[in-house]
Length: 447
Picture 1: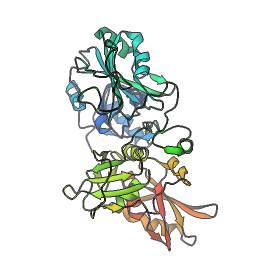
Picture 2: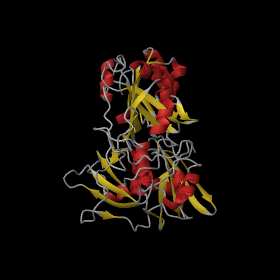
Picture 3: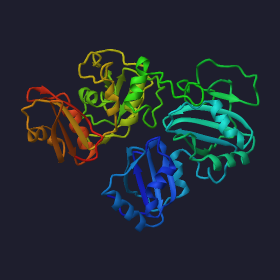
Picture 4: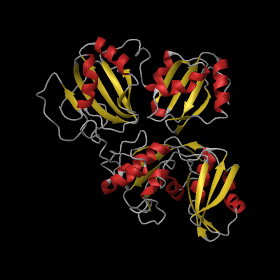
């Protein structure tokens, strides 16, 4: 463990979590004087007023699990004793970027339950000055846009007025930074980019982003402002899926991703195999194929049945600990996995959890937790037998066996999320008392 420091390291910071959310988290302990968001790593650094404030904060959160916007975050002392402007370089931002603002803003939209289009952005930002150009794109941090004003003064005014504000009530929060670009290049006027100084530019139907160096934004659709996302990747089950999530999508999920194949990296090559990956990724959708790469055995391709399910898996599993290593999950450049001798096929597996009659499985989607839920247990199996079946994977803090509609189930709480994850990937679909048991993460905080 790092020595006490006034700098706190925060992990599992999802795209839906804003700077203001983290500041509110530590506000009762004196507040933070500096904040660095490490979006690419889902992490953040908070500098408290002094070491004593940081110690008090971490002591409190060692007894109370901190949660921000429904996501569990993890706090520890940083190896930094002081944050400097040089620390911001790790975000890909220039050290003097904030001290020397220019006329181009980089905007990230968090908790995007409604679609954000060029027209919506223009409506929000134009009251603060003449907007010359807008370019939108999709990156790992989420939906982003570059907005170029006629003057830097307008950009400064817009950032001051709109930072951390919501476009719609309760969602679509704006995270605004100054870009280090000096001029935006817009080649097409369409739903992804617009040059308001040159209305005669052609319209591109679909293709690469108009802004060189940024990803394709074709998966963001220009719907009418004020309407809910059309859930284009959910097919005819959109209404049922939305209902399973309580009427809307989890924070940070767009429902518009069309990439089905994921790349999982930094895997423990001695312990991870295709079936263990299936047990984990099938929590978020039906898995079609998995392939561990021969030339990179700590890399694996996982093909989900649709883009929505792959987005769920990426969102909830990125940064998860598995067999002592922090797994990274990203979209693959390959649209699908070609069947081969090295490919494990799961498209017809009866262990896939999602089908037309089981859409309620979506409401159980969550990031790994310390508690697992076990179902399909034989009636004669006692609680201590259930615990004995999984306790080799970590220290069990508590457990409870119970019945629902005559079906035996159990909850088992481990000391850490990593231990619970190991139990799930190793023991899901294993046999206990003649029954094939099913395991998922529970969202309960205690038994």
